[in-house]
Each structure stands twice: as structure tokens, then as C-alpha cells.
Length: 145
Image (cartoon, rainbow, N blue to C red):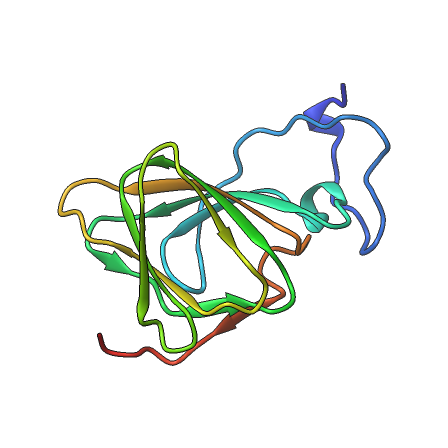
């Protein structure tokens, strides 16, 4: 196993090394679409070529900005909380997901996560086929529903 203390960021398109890497939880950052993100596996962090994995937290009573991921698939696992996701061309379709649910978002599908709880955060693990995580992120105008 790679010693975490010896890790460095990888130049674009190159892996840090060819062995398994275990990493501590990174500091949370504010995601461009809202909420907090801990970007665990990214090209910049480990040299991944076609994958990123993040832990995302959406605080109570938070509506993220509508967005899509250009040309990249997203798979989400709901760890805790209940999330409402508005999706589709006009964000008129609604899907509710809770703990233990898996959500698949095809490339280029507009979506808007909403945490309607007054008290509980929504925590998810999100994997995407964009190794840079937010390079394919396209923020969309906010619609009123």
C-alpha cells in the first residue's frame, strides 16, 4: 500500500503510481452548485484517468443550483437523508431517494438536488466518469417550480 505521506499530485494525464492508494478524507470545499464536497478520488489527487469519487453533503433546506455534467455519467449512493431531485429538460420530473438508494444520472441530463428536511443533512457518495470532477459541470439558470 502506498504511504499517504509520500503522495503528491499527478501531472495531467499521468498516474501517481501503479499501486493501491489509501487516502485520508480531504478538506470539504463549497461545491459550485451548492453544498459541500470532499473530493476523494480525482485526477489531480491520485492520477485517476476516468473516474472521480466524492462525498457530498447538502445541508437542511438547501436547493442546489440546477446543473448537468457534459458527456459524463454519474452514479450516486444515498448514505443518509432524503433527497428530492428535479430533472429533465425543464426540471419538471421529480425523483425522491433515501438511505440505501442508488441514483443513476446519464450524461447531459439537467438535475437539481433539493434537501427539504429542516434538520437532517443529505450525505451521498457520488462517482462520475469525469476524473477532474467539476470540469464537465455546467451550471444552468435557476427555474422556479
